[in-house]
Image (cartoon, rainbow, N blue to C red; front, side):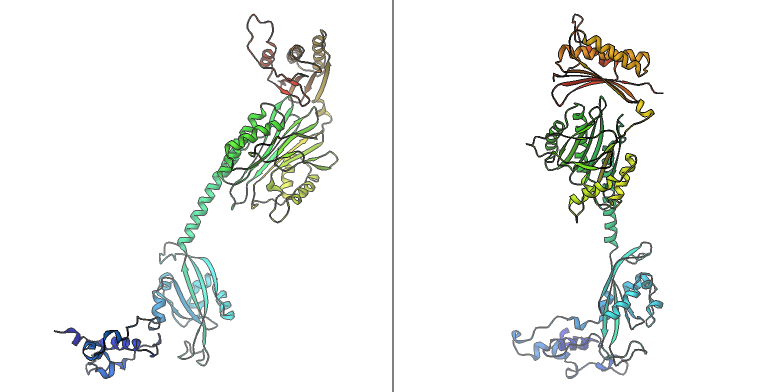
Length: 600
């Protein structure tokens, strides 16, 4: 049996063949997607089954028998065109889209259509009712005012990432997120109006609501933000653990510091500060900034801070400390740029000696309220190499204050940094109170909030002017030594008288006299003039210091039983709480020791 001959008589074959013939014919108008084939297009038999069509009515039989009726060669036959979008109905297209689709018309947004995806999430919706009645979920999502705007303006509007409870891909146990786009549409008035109240003589204006699910993207973004938050928290924890947990409090200075990391959208930076007591009443103050952000910057900061503390124990001048730090910074990471200020305060001299490696200037406020910058000298940032740093000094006597800070406090994207420093000068001039209060006032005056986009570190120090009972706890006494055989007895007598006037206990008085005698004897034997003995009392300790003109630093060594010398420094180190030595700026050295005073 030849099926080709009989296939045209199968039910429905004639209509499909006719549609293919119509689309293949050039110049034939396409069928509207809304036009469905009329039931009368195919004759029916008396029992309701389609009758066998003829070639004259459908053209399907000649198509099925093309090999017999068309003698033309195959290259002359027109190629069968593929189906076009005109052959598809809008209903079929929207019904297969996995996104949410709803079509409304008229000023009241009466519902005309929802697709299967919409019904799967929100349930079936009756047509013809207003959106407020039939689509309450759109009202809850805030889309009805947006649809009004779209209908009036004729321009599409989009809202992103709206949460739909229990609406993730039809999963009622999982919340979903959708981005909704409202697009104006217009249906020609060629057919019946979708609602009896809408006239057929005018086009029907409406809105197509299209909801694309973005649940996976939102959840991925939330996971990414949570991961970034954990990483930032780890960096902040590392940063804070590398900063001093509690600042050392010198005898002669009041200090306070604050550190505020950048806002939640910014990774932590490499700002740091430190306060280091050097002995003999001297204090080192450090602040620095490692450029860049993240754990790497915090790690480099920790290494630099540790190195500064180690170099400070050598009791070197500020510029020599920065010189050592410069070489170390290049070895740690040559790609990381860091700035730093290292300053030393000596209460006996009433000055702040400092060196700067590319950092912002120290601000000093005099007792009369005048603020000035300690701007020179300043070298390049750490790690550049090949630069000889130098030290400068600025007066910092009783009643004066100073502030060290990082660029996050004064730098703004839309302003020159000098404007920020000037604003800090004005704020510092009017910031009274204890150092911790001054830190808070500077942050507020410069507009630093929790959302600030850069790290901020501030270190405030005050040299208080003591009066009354506090002044009685701080004393200085000095004796110039001219050498000779009478120098040692004169030093012992001076120390004994001064310590007795300070009403120290007998045991401490004797230890102080012994230490002064040993240090003076060491200076007379190994040093050169000028020589001076200085005794200093604070509220917490007694300091004995001897200076001379020789820059050879003593060291503690073990003396042999037969040695007649070499035991002086060992004796001092044994009886004192601490001891040390350093070179003085004008050439020479200073050797000192400390005794802790009994409390109460």
